[in-house]
Amino acid sequence: MPETIQTEVVIVGAGPCGLFQVFELGLLGIRAHMLDSLKAPGGQCAELYPDKPIYDIPALPVCGAQELVDRLMQQIKPFEPVFHLGEEVMEVTPRDRRFDLVTSTGTRFDAGAIVIAAGVGSFRPRRLGIPGCEIFEGQYIHYRVKSIDDYRNQQLVIFGGGDSALDWVIEFARMAPSVTLVHRRNKFRAAPASVARMRELEAAGKVRFIQGLAESLMIEGDGIKGVRVKATDGALLELSADHVFAFFGLHPKLGPVAEWGLELERKALKVDTEKFQTNVPGIFAVGDINTYRGKKKLILSGFHEAALAAFGIQSWLYPEKKQFLQYTTTSPIMQKRLGVAAS
Image (cartoon, rainbow, N blue to C red):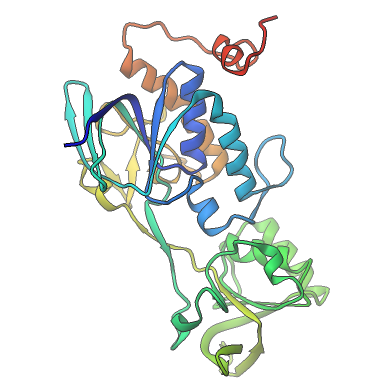
C-alpha cells in the first residue's frame, strides 16, 4: 500500500481559483497539495481557451487565459505547492476533524481540510452534432482555440451565442478575412458589450451573422470546404470555411464529488458566504463549482471566495489560533519566501 501523504490542505482543481487559493493559504502559512484530473495546471482556461482574452483581472487591461495561468503559477511559486496531475479524487472519508482521500491512481492523503475548486467539474464540449463531424474534429472542426495564430488569414465559421462564441468572433475579426457567426436565434447569452461590439463589426462588414442551425458539412477530398446552414426562413445556405468552431458550452459532470454527501443545488455545491464552507465542516468550495445567493460565475468572484475561504480554513485547522489580516506588503512570510528585506 502506498504511503499516506499528510498535509494541511488538499485543493481539488488546479484552475485559476484553485491556484489563487494556494496563494491565499500561503499568506497564512498554510501549505497545500493540488489535485487535477488534467495533465497540466490551468483547468478550463488552459485546456479549452488558452488564447481567450480576459478583461476583468484587476490591473491587467487584457490577459490571455494561459497567460493568467502562467502568472498565477509564478505568484504561488514561493509557497511550494505539490501538484498531483492526471488524478481524480475517488474517495473521501471524514475522520476526527480530518479527511482520508484516495485518488484514481491510488495516492492517499490525510488532510486537515479540503477545498473543491473544480470549476464545472469534469467537462467535455458540446459537439456540433451533424453527420460525419467527428471525423474532422481537431483538424477542421474545433471546440477550443489553442493557438490563435493558426487561423490567421483563414475563412472561419463560428457557431454559438454565448461569451466564448462572441469573444472569438471579435478576436478573429481582427485577423481573418471572413468571419461568420451562426446562432439559432437573434438573442445572445453573452455580455451586452460583446454583443454590441459584434453588431458594430457586422455593420462594418467585418462579420456576417446568420440566424440558423448547422445542417451538414461540405466535404471535399479528405477535408471540408465549408458547412451548410439552414436559416430560420428555411433557406439552405452554403458557407465556405477553412475551419469551423462550435462554442455551445460544456457538459458539466461533478463525477465522484457528487457522492461525498455534500449539499447540491442545480449540480453546484451550496456554501455559506462567510468562509465558503459546504454543509460538511472542513470541506470548502470556491469558483464555478459553488452556489449561493447572488453568485456570479466570474474569475474575479472566485478570487474573492478563495481569500475568505483561506481564513475559514485557518480557523478550522487551528481553532485556538488568533486570526489576523496579513497584508502582502508587510507579510513576513512573503518577505522570507521572496527574500525581501523588511522595511
